[in-house]
Amino acid sequence: MRQAWRVADVRAAERSLMATLPEGTLMQRAAAGLARRCALVLADGQGVYGARVVLLVGSGDNGGDTLFAGADLARRGAQVQALLVRPDRVHLAGLRALRAAGGFTVLDLPGQADLVLDGIVGIGASGGLRPPAAALVERLSGLRARSGARAAIIAVDVPSGVAVDTGDVPGAAVTADITVTFGCLKPAHVIGPAAVRCGQVELVDIGLGPVLRADPAVSVPDTEDIASWWPHPGPASDKYTRGVLGVATGSAQYPGAALLSVSGALAGPTGMIRYAGSAHAEVVRAHPSVVTVPRVADAGRVQAWVCGSGLGTDDDSRTTLRSVLATALPVVLDADALTLLIDGKHAGDLRRDAPVVITPHDGEFKRLAGEAPGPDRAGAALKLASWMNAVVLLKGDRTIVATPSGAVWANPTGTSALATAGSGDVLAGLLGSLLAGGLPPERAAVAAAFTHGLAGRRAAEDGPVTAPDIAAALRATVRDL
Image (cartoon, rainbow, N blue to C red):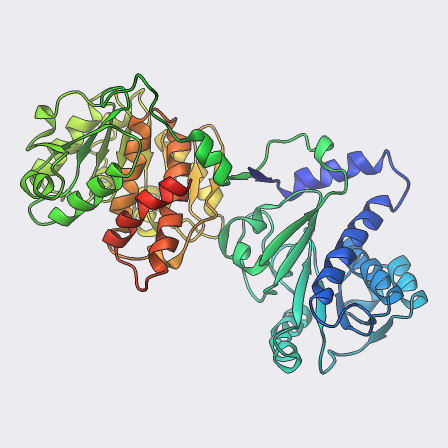
């Protein structure tokens, strides 16, 4: 599992560590790690010796890291040119080191380069790039086009122009092939549009880990986490002990939503699915193993419910939602169930001890919260989770899972292939199966989003993706996990 920390917490840890070390030690550690990664990139081409390296150097420590790394590469024979964005505020020790190693400064971008280091601004920046830096960033694409496919851009700590704590990109920003960050990950590396700008993220250990006292801002699961959480049947398991999921989705108008949510649930760990709704005839015809009834009241014993996908918003739908919320069981609310919550008539029904997981996309989120998620998607999801006392799975390229207790997870497996009708129905069914299988709600949400994303990627290997393709890919995805 990876974790990311906010800038204030990183700065506090750096101050604590620097108080125990000789002056400049952290910068030298960072620069050495940065230079090493640059050398590895150049080794894939012509090598370090003779390589054309351009440094985009801003003020402060980020510029110092860049200059010291450039000095290291110059000592290895690279042709290192530094463009100083703020010559009046350059890191003087770093500039002296670069010049002593044979590097030099230039007044404009050169015609070509084998490697560009983006050290314009670091984690201390806020509010977007200033006009001169923004103009420089906009011209990087031209340099890259002239330099050929092998030219690489490496961002120093974060790509310049991104909002570090939120992952937003408020204006012009660097799009890096690789981001070399120091000490720990930051939210911009894992959430929002900034994460896409980072490219491959490499973490350089500078000794910060032991002094990071605060809780991480964001956690990012990996395959090992999901595999270790996934419920597995044992020798004594039967269909009931594995968990029974109730599914209240679909309608006469939208029977496909019922079929898709049940398909997602069948790929999960539960031993039995009970479907309750007006699409019961279509469900049992497509899935003979599913027990179907027309109403929630007739469903029998289950361990969790999924409600909402294609349910509709009429009086019968409202009765279904109220019946599900009246149980003392974990509940996943999706699509039409969220629409029914918006008018406030079910506010009292949400005062329950059992967990609730909601799965809004941005439009549903706006209607629930009264405002769009905005640039701080993690913060917005946390606010809604606290207000509704529910785990929030905010869908998107980097899906966010937020809990009422303040924890945030970012899903790393998102893909644009999932932007297709019915994809969320499949996700809701899988999430419900994990809940019924015994996972805590936040882990069920994280595991469902992670697996759903992998299934979308697998389905995309065969061409354009539909929701049934995602559902069909889930079994092989779970097998590989």
